[in-house]
Length: 123
Image (cartoon, rainbow, N blue to C red):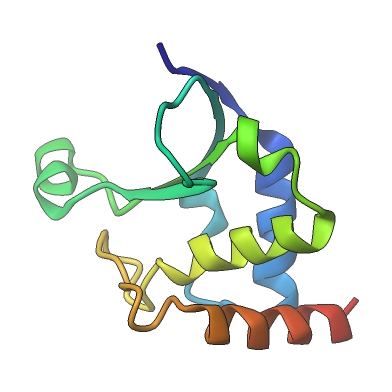
């Protein structure tokens, strides 16, 4: 059984990344962050979820995103790799911030690494 808990420390890290890398399209107030334990997913370190258009219209709310960190894997990473994982998940959020996703043709190791280097130079 998977257990979820809010992860304010992850949200704080994401806020810093968004600010330092100037991701102006990311509305941090509409991002929720959670840590989970108990996933049987193999190789997954984090996930990004979106509130789809049909849910947005049904609930009469704007797009929201959730970033889930799988504690068993994420917590063992170095701080540098944690930053890379969070950059990867943020990159899934499109510039429209409308409930869609950017796919792995854009969210790739090369783009993550370029942004990680920028992040390091802004620190």
